[in-house]
Length: 383
Image 1: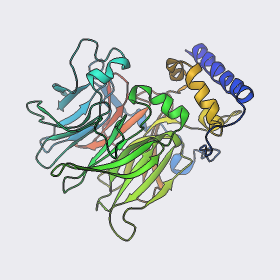
Image 2: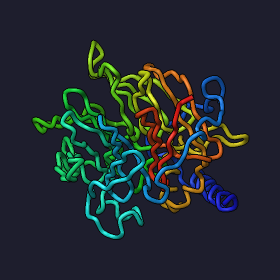
Image 3: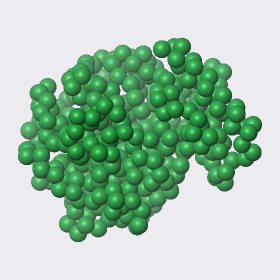
């Protein structure tokens, strides 16, 4: 594995070198340049092994349980890479429905995801129905008992004349408003690595009113907007911009309503979903770490000022090779309402999990999501 990773690193850096010399100049007039270097792992970010104190559930039965929600009866709900929705009750797994077509190839390759579906954000509304953001198909209401699906808003319909390409994060307010993110209007979920490499700002934060069918864009020109979470008073939404490692706050109420501010930049990794804890804090899954290297800066930092190089890489480097560049390091952050880091949980060797997409607290447990791993990691306690 180490040899394959060395080859992948060599190819990637060769692409950078070739791009720097053969491509005359950046073609994006405003490339995103990472602040740096990344923060030191000290204080609340200090390395620990607390994330290793858990266990794996449903190994080989669930692949990529990305996001979670739960009902008052203790049932947990999640979606997987094969386009299926599942109910978990006392460590028992039950199939609910298939978001797209249920064919044998589902889950065998990302190429089948547009047909099979890929549920990302899942939540329960006030009537006990599941609201699901399928990356390829749209927003759905799903009966968790019968599995009956109702399409609320299709990707093709989109908003403001722009179809959705990559539905991702999801949140519901007390009055039933559905907030969601479209991570990109260029690349779909199966090409997420290209979206990250190119660092486009083609994402949106949107809202949908189920009673009226009204959909509107709240923010646009976002860098791969991903997970979102409402504050306890629902006066703001905290949102992750994954491809640049940034946390935003969008105000829903008060004198700043309709505006945004930046809560956190220069993060130690790339944030995925954000969830509210029972302590009123925000739990953030880190999908890929961004630590200081001994010699070279983090790879995306290095190529950040050169959008032409990044586009060159998307044509030269196979998608599968990027996986070899990703270290198996698990990281979870706990943030305050202003984006301050309060705590962190680490798994430096990937003993339990890595590439964490979600941190969902329920029934005294913490369920850790992922986009591709073939199991469900669970922590029995935070400390």
